[in-house]
Image 1 (cartoon, rainbow, N blue to C red):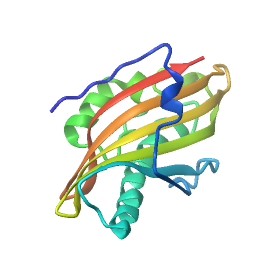
Image 2: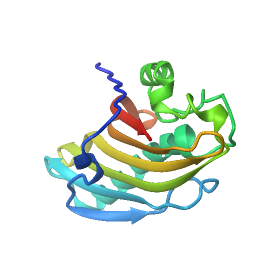
Image 3: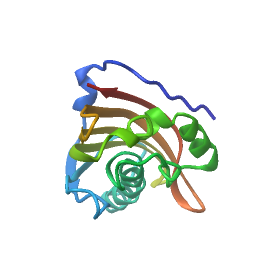
Image 4: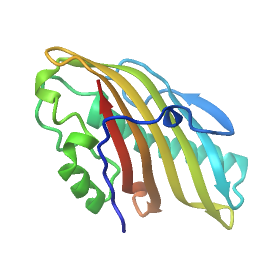
Length: 183
C-alpha cells in the first residue's frame, strides 16, 4: 500500500477542470455547510459497468468524499483545533497517515485563526475499474475551493486523488495524493 501526501505552493490549472464524460451535479452531504453542490461524474472506465451501477457507485463514493471534505475543511465550528474526526470513510492506515498529514488533509494549521469557511467549488471525477460488471476500485479526482474568514483570510484550493476500494464497510479511502494551496 502506497500513501502519498504532498503539499504544494502552486498547482497547474489543469486540476481545476478534470476531464469527464457526463457531469452529474448533486447536493452536498452536509446540511451544516453552506450549499455548494458537488459536481460528480464518471471519467475513465476500465471494464464494463451498467449505467444503473454507475449512478449508484457515484452516489456511494460521493458520500465518502463529501464526508472527508466536510469534516476536514468545510463543516464544523471555527475557530477550532481538533481535527481528529476529519477522515471518516478512510481505512485505519489511511486515517493514521492523514492525521500525520493534518495540515494538508484538513484545516488543522489554520483552524484556530479562522472563524468560518465559505465553500466555492466541489468537483469529483471518478475513474473506475470494473471486473465482471462490478466496480472494484475507484480513483476520485477531487477539486475543492473555499475562502476562510477571521484573522486568517485565505483562498484555499485542495486538489488531488483519493484511492478507494470496497470492503465490508462499503467504499473506503486507502490512499491519497493531494495538494493544498492557500493564498
